[in-house]
Length: 296
Image (cartoon, rainbow, N blue to C red; front, side, top):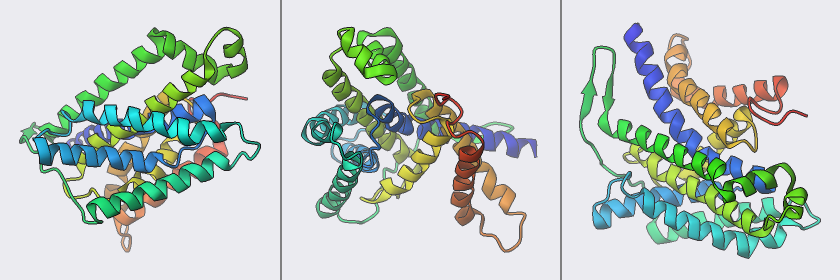
C-alpha cells in the first residue's frame, strides 16, 4: 500500500508540474490583459507538433526541442497579438477578443488537420526505467520534470529580476498607473502575450512525453479544459497559482482511478474528468478567487 501511495504521488507531481507549466501561460495572459485566450489549446497542440517534427526530421527528443518550441511560440504570439488581440483589446464589446481567439483556434486546428491529417502521431522516446523499492519511473519523466523546474526558475527570474518582469507585474496591478510611471504598456502587453504563448508551446512539447501515440490536431481542447480548471483552482491571473492547481489536478488524476475502482459499475478513467469539474465547482463555491487569486 505504501508503495502505491509513493507511486501515485511521484507520478501526480510530475504530470501536475507539466499541467501547471502549460497553464501558467493562460494565467499570465489573463492577468496582464484580461483576455481568455482560447487559442491556448492550439498553441499547445502546435508545441506538441513542433516536438514531433523535430524528432522525425532532425532527431531531437522533446526536451531538446524546447528552444525551437519557445522560438516558434514567441513569433506566433507576437504576430497574434499585433494582428488580432491588440486591435480588439480596447473594443467596447468585451466579448470580441474571446470570440476572436475562439475563431482563430478553430482555424488553426483545421489548418493542422489539412497539413498533417487527423491521424494520431507520437514520439517513441524511451530511455529505460528507474526501479526503486517503492516505485518505478521512466527516465524520460525525470528529465521532463527537471525541465519543468528549470523553466519555472527562468520564468521566476524574468518576472521578478528583470525590468520587463516588473513592468508586467505593474500592468497586472494597474495598467494606468504603470503608464504614468513610464512603462510602455503596449510593448509590455505584447511581450506578456508572447511569454504566455511560449509557455503553451513548451507545455505542448513536454506533454508529448506522456502521449506516445496521442498527438492530433484536436488534442489541445482536452488540455484546455484541464488548464481552465487549474487556472480557476489556483487563482486566475496568478501564474504561480497555476502550479498549485496543476499539482492538485495531477494528483487527483492519479488517485481517482484507483479510488473509483473500488466502486462497482463505475469505469474509473472515464469518470475522472467529472471529478476534475466537481473540484472546479466546489472551489468556485467556497473560494471563488482560487487559492492564490486576488481577494476582493
